[in-house]
Length: 420
Image 1 (cartoon, rainbow, N blue to C red):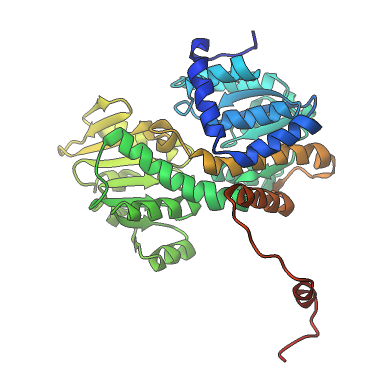
Image 2 (cartoon, rainbow, N blue to C red):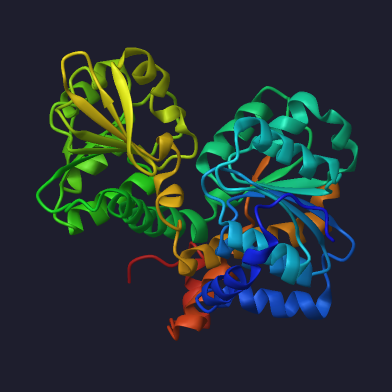
């Protein structure tokens, strides 16, 4: 039996069917897996991954194994794990998985330690928890690590701070910042899956309601776009003047959070920051307002303040909790403030994760070839990898594009030709 800690191996049949279903909509990763199977570029390499344990992630794990890697996987969020997927990964694909949906905080970090105990040579992270743990308390694992890759905006921010302080001990590729990741996964994936999670948990009609989006990065843009398409009046809260101006020019109302709080029927945070919905917001919210988070950590909502000041808390249904305030108003929190798109639904559709995880697979291959020449800092995904993934995606979609002619290439590389 492979070393693992999962809910129930008997769930594997259902998990395998769902993994194969997702694979149908991940043709780029499938093509990389076919090449990896032939060339074995990851042969003998130990990869430790802390990612959402979903069907899409399972197909990344299959690709890494096909490339010859030994893989150990834990969850990057206690509520995003699909237990049947974890079971199938262990039984059918030989991946050592440490993840149980709903695991407590102690188990969560015990599972992260299990990945670190594996002595990985490459780390794949979604939020930076493995990298942070290694640098804070598990430095014994550092000597064998050649590099890593990071999936999220939140994780890249943490890693950049470590690098700026000279604390980052090995190079990490910011998969999140690849164009084929954030243009599509963050925008189209988050936009659709966040609304999917809200609807599944609440069964509320979105049309005609006011939805507040905190953060107008790529995730916020996608969410605002999709909410508008569902008939919502959308308000954007921002601290970046350029992003706020962009939201205004895109046709959305822009205002401070204290003002938005009076109008929000539904409020979603996608900032990667702390206490975005805070006491000044809770005190101004209308009765029955729904709050949730689609950024990486539940710290975006000041849940401790709610716990301290509410008269009572009631679980209305799974992952839907109602807080009653001293003045009688109620505030409804979804999914414990954790990623609502993964906790309340199934996360990003496979079609966009296809590109995100293709970046992880090719970043791992790149690290094996180049890590020895890389400094301990955060790197962009090489432009050629980004372009190759985009070209593969277009090919799978049956979309053809133009190519520059030799004359055009020459024109772009000269300065002597002007207006004629």
